[in-house]
Amino acid sequence: MAVVDISSIVMSSRIRLARNLDKLPMPPRLSGENGFKVLKLVADSVSGLDEFKIYTIKSLPDIDAHVLQEKHLISKDLLDKKDFGAVILNTDETISIMVNEEDHIREQCFLRGLELERAYQMLNALDDKMLKKLNVAYSDDFGFLTTCITNLGTGMRASVMMFLPALTLSGQMDGIMNFLSSRGLVARGAYGEQSDSVGFMYQISNARSLGVSEKEIIGAVKEAVNQICEYENRARIKLVAEKEAEIKDRVFRAFGVLTNCFKLTTAELFKLSGEVKMGIALGLLRFKDNAILDKLMVECMPNILTKINKAPTEELDRDIFRASFVANALKNQRIK
Image (cartoon, rainbow, N blue to C red; front, side, top):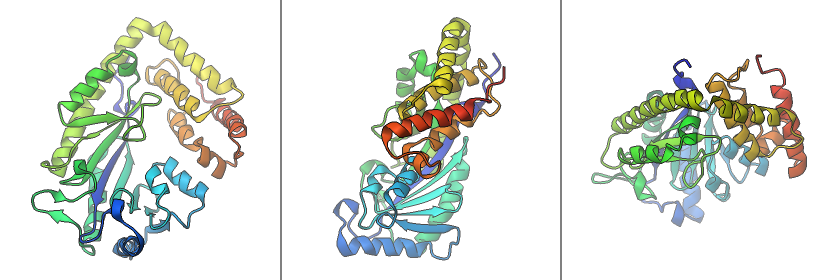
């Protein structure tokens, strides 16, 4: 098998910055007048930046708010902050700013591939513009002050989404967890803290931000990601060499279900897509568009499927619709 391209392992990069306004209660103690004051101050800090638009959670229809959550543009926690929670988005949705979630300000930038430096440059430029208009809580000893002590310091979380089927199936993920822990890093599921891995997807990020610079955090995450790519590549080669028939069977069974099932839940789609993506990455299955399954996993999230693709709202009917939607998208994809 040929050397695996990093693009089949690294899916996306994210930089997140946490900030709080000085002399105002942090969100866990925020209420009434102060909540709206934070909202106004943050909105004013991006005024004049034409590519950004603000949406209050209260003003968004429930389905639209859930669509943003399914796109990872806002968190589940922000959905509950209807009084003075808000999100500010740029035109192409690579940058989002959550207002009054766990912290007053949560800025984040998502880019495809291993692009931590570029994501940081984009977000840091925005952060600089905002901080010129805002007085943020900062300590010479502890850096940016945040609700959670693990975010003290730079207030930055650098994370990379990785697709690691071979390391998972070969039982090596415990070793990877130890490897990351020894470097002050951590692996989580696709939806962050307290979420499990689905479809062989893991989010690799720094565990702390105090006592280290932004450059050091990015360097540590990127170095670990590159090392894990090497481990995954070796594991893939070994997996095909030792268990090709077994892996082919898993891959083609998953493909058969995706293209022939009558109903399909979101969880089943993620699990089966992970199996098929593994087959593509290992060269056991060829598709015209190798990114089609990643697109479908977004397009087939419950609220996105209903809002964008006009699926029914009832769960069973939506699962039936999803099965047909996926089968139609995949029917001419395979190159035999």
